[in-house]
Image 1 (cartoon, rainbow, N blue to C red):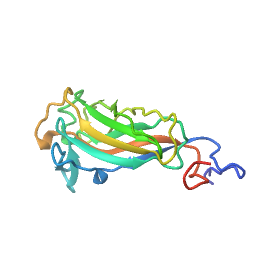
Image 2 (image 1 turned 60 degrees about the vertical axis):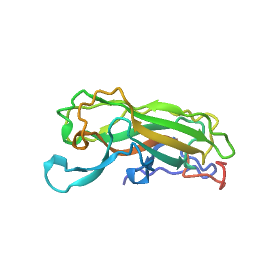
Image 3 (image 1 turned 120 degrees about the horizontal axis):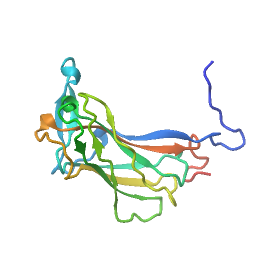
Length: 195
């Protein structure tokens, strides 16, 4: 019988904190109309179905808004990262970097959004065609924030990376942006706050 985690019956928190994903898929991105990534074809392995992915040239950008879940352990850091692929350019772009960046501002309910900060998620291509790459997680401080905080974000490819390909068929593709967060409960006891 597989192990099943249970909650303490008197306090509705996990016995140990659990990692979870807050996912922002490319279909949820907001495009400004200028400097938009291109929707391009990707056929993994060079055969079979062709998929549509957003490829980023230098200075391309997208925007998103998300709410921090009620399951989040308040005060702990948020760890953003990007899932991406070099598509069929993995071997060609081996050891080249992609300067993924995220500008953000975050505020709890009734809080004030401060000037934006930047998380640098620059990553190095592993040299394998069609591989699922994963950037090292960045850090957004959670101190003073509460559940239902709103995170405003801008994801872009900054100048200064070493990626060589410049036309759409040669650009890196963003698969998903997400944020790892520590969860200490299924949700909250109250509608508007944690306990």
